[in-house]
Length: 136
Ligand SMILES: [Mg+2]
Image (cartoon, rainbow, N blue to C red):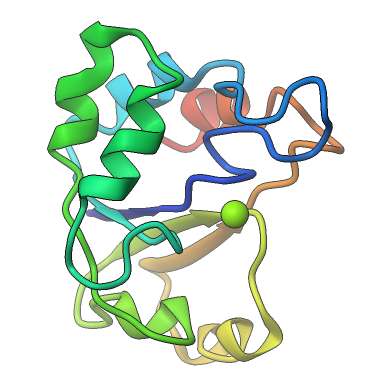
């Protein structure tokens, strides 16, 4: 299965000044659990097929032993809608904290193997831990 990953508000906090950019609780275990899957960036930090900026941002906030898990995440190409960067011929889960109405509109037509999971770390700071336990 393919996994699409947002950064801000999904793997790094962006909700409050005192935790801004801090790695979300359970991030290491989440990245470990993604190892069997083909992973892709779906973040504004990577939309031109170049993963360098996304890698740089993540590596500032995680321990070095997780760098290989970051380096294997593949880039995507999209412009306005993240859904344009998704391969709709495959099964996937997309994790993001900020999905637009236009992006949601693609999902009623999606089959069961194509899912979007809206993360809300403000309501539930332990959400990545729960995703790793219940979903991956
Ligand atoms: Mg985000």
